Length: 261
Image (cartoon, rainbow, N blue to C red):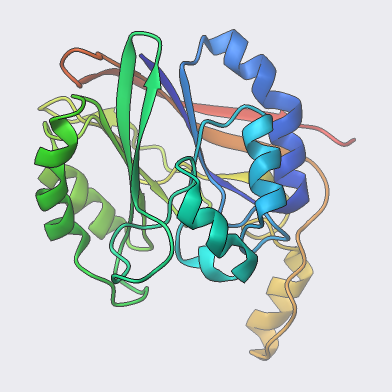
């Protein structure tokens, strides 16, 4: 079972890269399941129903998210009714939507879980304890469990992965928009990378116009963020998972550039 996981899609440029690069990438890499974080796909912050459907039509199977999923309230009803759209599972009861779903393909299935870290982010329910409660339930349905851990701190992501080694199939971090070079298979068979990176403009700062961010560091004043222009980089990982055991057997980073020059 071959899984392609893509980092945070940033604004219209990120969506253009998905539309342009993903169909060929799926064929080239013989991908079964595509997961992408969509919390920044609408204007750089948040997600709208129109943008979600655009991304599904482009070939993404499941959209995960994070703390920015709440930025556009029009997404709330879609979170409630759409199995292909997740928000972090450790938000309190009453938050719209759900934090896990099941994907079923030809001869394979997977549980996809979305969780948020708590270091330097909102004080949500503990993701470590929640996944310990969830895993037995999920694994009654399928041996393959894939987790998007949307978190700021590298230490929190790494600790989480070690805790679920052998119980989860694949753990990838999102949120920082910077792809890390630490992809590996942990001793008990869990594939891991600290952050997938992003699918967005590479000459900005995390996908935002660089002059705006530089000015903010200089004057410390609030400013309106604008998604950057120019070449777009698609980042993520490709993982092969044994559908019978749920163990990752290979993992590698993926990077493609949509050039506008």
